[in-house]
Length: 483
Image (cartoon, rainbow, N blue to C red; front, top):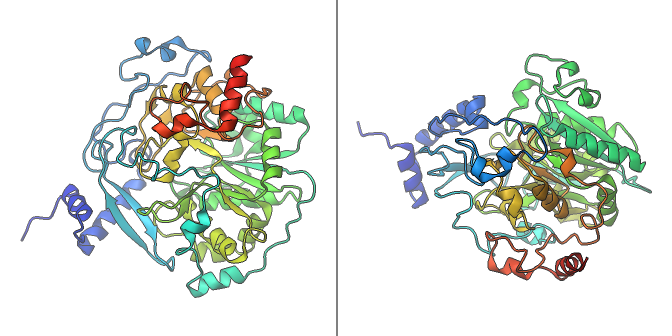
């Protein structure tokens, strides 16, 4: 006869150390899963109070003054300000959210609750200890106590013979796009493809289209990209938010069908390319290992962002044992694509070493998570992104990065000058090809540290130590200033 606790009370007690009632937790999980099937709740402001969505008109030119100038911002669309509504449980205002951590045997998922408040630029985790730069991070040290084969399935997995790495000569990248019905920056991608073709370097471009009602390739909105769309798509139910492993399998199968492909890059349809193909190949020659953007934050457990670069041998290994991977490594809850690939790869690399199973912690996709409490939020600290971050956007939440509604020429330059290969998350026609340069020594030189050029270049939202920059970055900034 006692009153059932409100959701907020449960999280408050939980965060204070109280154990939640299991039946109540089970009901909450069922509600969570049900809401994930509702496109509006899943894709925009789940659990938030309903607020009118601002009407975002596509800029008429690469420099639309109505979007560039804060003084000309339309009602509900202010440069640099959040467009999110303020709700209660699970909204950006109270910030209650779910995170999932893997148990040692990958058979179940423990659920943790965490409370936070404030905008995505104000967070209790904004310290040098909590934000570690992915490149060069000692992921083996982070993984030492977690990434050892324990179960029979894990021991069987590490015993599988690795496919022969047949790469001899130049790299060939397969760019694999996860899309619904379009790309958000089609003209930027067309410009990139044209430059890649003119360079004479080989590459493959493939798109997985989500078919809600059995649509054909001709229903892909961007007709210039229809030739790249796969003939077959994953079952619609398996191409939802955090449920795209089946679509990734299809893209990987199509990529390795070309025997000359050496690497596979998973890329989002709401991403924009930042580097020309010749730069990417220079990087692949320098470091041909599989690159995963890892996160070892305690509350979340080990995981990696969806957007990876995988060497062919690893992709072939996964495909050879597809049913085994699905059964033993694809989690029943949470973002399956963030955990399906990382754990089996780190198990083998930890056991076999870097020479036999090369794997690095390196983020190739710039994503603005604000200053939330996970390592991916360090992206905004790995360069000067003041112009980008001042653009109109929807604030980041725990499960969703910022969505930008406009990208000006200076923001495009800052992103291209960074260490990243791609950037997301951008709305339809928010970026323009005229703002991107594919032939620039200043943008694509030898400096790949992505550090700040010194105190003058350090953005105001960066930590004090960021102003120190790196020797290479300071030298590049000095040379640019002298020129």
